[in-house]
Length: 279
Image 1 (tube, rainbow, N blue to C red):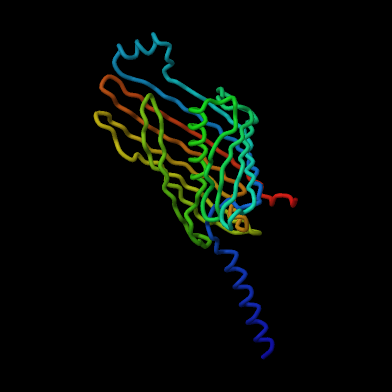
Image 2: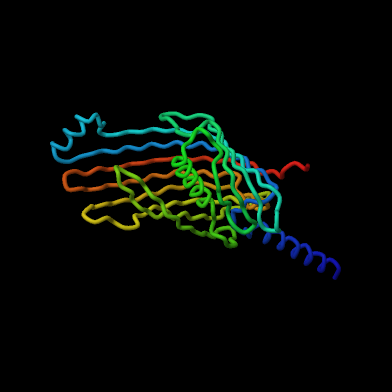
């Protein structure tokens, strides 16, 4: 009888341990009194090809416009987010320091080091308030801060509990500036939980890009796809590694000409999370 009870207890304990390991609460959050150090490596390839009437192609050549236009970029950077103490039980101040480690295939308008001030709360993603720099004009500061805020919003995961084998998706808008126009697309990212090992959840990522809406008098076709992997730290509600590759294909037909775009990108982000040292 005692043996039967013991075996039953072993089964219950094992089942509870297995269940707790397999169920993951998906949520990205920035916590107070914590340092998030991220290294970013991003490569991109963009190719635009024009076709159309001879007069249009001749004008391109006379203006020194390459056809096709090919741009390769590689960016290496480090980002350090440091959060302060809770001031009212919910909110805290934060700083984000970005250091550009290297760049290939282009030039950057941002300084080698940049400091951004912001604030956060325990139940929402941080908000960036201002950039501390005397080497950037106010217009570029606003553009850059908007881009950084957009990148933070893209870190958000579908907030739900998932088990191994479950999938969950998020939809985010994307604005694509091409040849003097802005094309609006929707990016759907689907996360599938593959396994959980030592508090790290291993997710497969599938990305699908679709055109939101066309434009008057312009025929546009656009699509994109990609995929990658995320290693998610359950205790810290933050990723340890995020890697994704994307490819977008776009075709725009105007009255006198048309152009096609092929864009490919690969981004690898590694993160280290540590509590701030005690004062």
